[in-house]
Length: 280
Ligand SMILES: Nc1ncnc2c1ncn2[C@@H]1O[C@H](COP(=O)(O)OP(=O)(O)OP(=O)(O)O)[C@@H](O)[C@H]1O
Ligand SMILES: [Mg+2]
Image 1 (cartoon, rainbow, N blue to C red):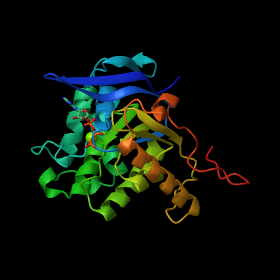
Image 2 (tube, rainbow, N blue to C red):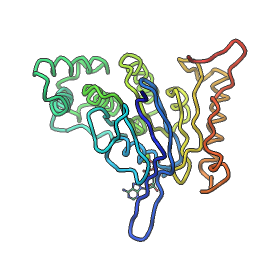
Image 3 (cartoon, rainbow, N blue to C red):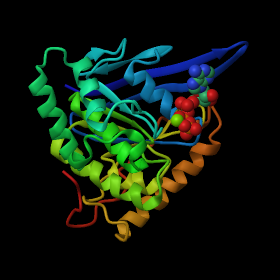
């Protein structure tokens, strides 16, 4: 069974007399444990796509399934991490933030079990020594690690991330991206990750969705670069160039364009070399 399935999802916002098409006929299917990265110009519907999957918005048409069940509301099977560095409760400690989410999501769990779980996720993000600090005593990167631990502590099937590292400096951002990949490979949670950053998309994704202006899918790209991805790999440069071009087209693609009618481009990012550099 697919972990996540978008079936011809459209979302139209009506504001006064104006209608804004945020998503248009979006379809794709994610296997359990995959890492999917959504890229696209500002306003192409990336956040709307995540919010619909989280159950915070309803699609105007089409449907979204998670593990075969239609999404109609938020649920603890889908946890979201935002770009905002202030998404933690400032009056709770690092540990308190994680415990609070856990107790809400898992009222069935005993105190000891909650506490053990919270500590194990703090350890996973490397913050076990900071459990009793408050958010204002943390760096931006540490806050995002707490937000990730808090989301993962609930043990969702799908982790939704909306540009979680966008407000951080480049070095911290690269470090956290690498950490996220380690966490992903340890937990095998399914990740849907939004970024503006081409390299971040290439480093993280099993599959890349390129959204175009107007909310349609410009491309669905299997990312067959071998892991761990190396930015100095010549194949990486080829993939970077191709994604760059697709994003350029996504900026200017007029609605109803012939490319849209043909459906999304779906070739793997890099042609496999003889001998095969394929990810299985
Ligand atoms: N609640 C809303 N009401 C009306 N229009 C909305 C609403 N939310 C989003 N939109 C519109 O939907 C479109 C897609 O917005 P969305 O926030 O999903 O884009 P995005 O790809 O996440 O952009 P960015 O990269 O800037 O974060 C935009 O035109 C936006 O104005
Ligand atoms: Mg957004």
